[in-house]
Amino acid sequence: MQRRYELLAKLARYDGPSAEVLDELRSMGWDWAGEPLLVLTKEHFLGVMDRYLAGSLSAEQLEEWAESLEQREDVGFSPEAGDILDETLFCLANPSINLGISSESVRQLRERLLEA
Image (cartoon, rainbow, N blue to C red; front, side, top):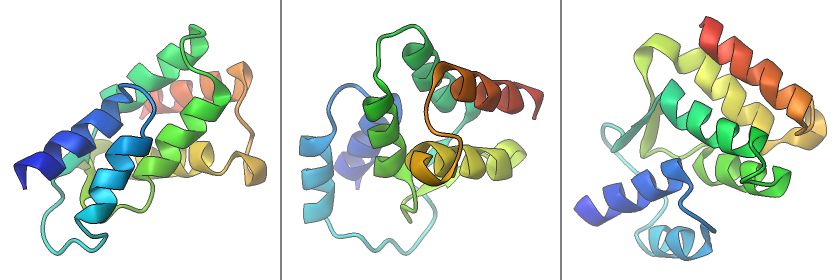
């Protein structure tokens, strides 16, 4: 269980391409019955979004980050901002049906997080 948590924490920080991390997580199985191992917070989101806005991450990388965390049963959201975090993750993971990923859309999402 500790290794699974470490991998999820690495995903949440987006320490680089996630293919190897996701492959290892897949080998552990998708289903999770219990409390989330990792709780995503505003800080996780703001950290990755700020890196995108600074030019350290591409739109594709930001989308990959969101896709890798979306709908995971072993990942939850901090209770004080759960709805806005879930909505933000959905927007970033599915840009083609949302605002897309651009500096402007990410700034808007970031502002909504800060206001929540």
